[in-house]
Image (cartoon, rainbow, N blue to C red; front, side):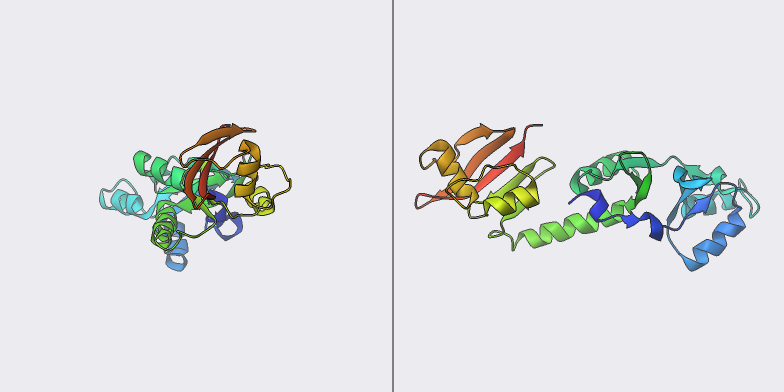
Length: 218
């Protein structure tokens, strides 16, 4: 899944505005007890950072902040990510960089929403948990560019759901396309390239293509 499918949409984000006092942030926190808040200047499309409650409390304890201090004194840089990035890819990037929250932007740089490391982890853990029961599912996403497909998946579904651009012909399934393209029954492990796709036949049983992986080369 992509980030825009799991993010908190912009209209549901609880924002802080540059220049706001710590005391005002407390009032917002009492109604919305989040651990972090994005901070914008002038408008939500101009996010300038992230404020964490722990950083504010630490600043107060160390006398670096008081209730009249502006929140940006406790602000950290924001991480901006495209809405089309895959959940698994972003999770590992955020884990490596130490970011707990990311601002999701569209192709024009506008703010679409936000996503947290916790949300990504829940999504991935749910996916891994479900994987135990997915052996017969038509599609399993392996990474950002690769999917595993059931040979019995229809050509129309493959093209509509996965945008593979496979040609239609005198066959109805992805397995039928493979047989037509090769002109024979493939062996397990056999690979070929078609229209920017690297196809690997991963399982053949009783002369039937059961499973295959498809990787986008571009």
